[in-house]
Amino acid sequence: MDHHSLSGRAVGSRKWEMQQLMQEFQGLYTEKLHRLDESAAAETEEIIKMKLRIMRSYVADLSEQNEVLAQTIEDIENEANHRVRELERRMSSYLDDRNQVVFKIESLEGEIDLLKQE
Image: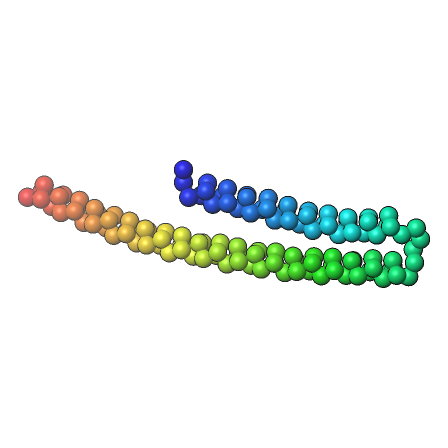
């Protein structure tokens, strides 16, 4: 099994875990609001204030999740850019080596031709 399939599984697992966590957050807030609605026969000022606190807390959590996701995207972009630069460096080195080998082969072929003429 190669490194790429292992890292792909790890990313898939982390993605699944993140989705589960986000669904859990949403479920908790939905449940809080639902319980509040069930316990209150009418929309009193206190109930409205409690709903507002719950919604503000939910918005704060979503904002924090967005910050984490934005940082994760930035980290992934940086890693991808690093890998691209490393591949470009390797390719350049490979091409330099290849060109040297081609030059050496052409030089040796020239020497062989000279030796054949002697």
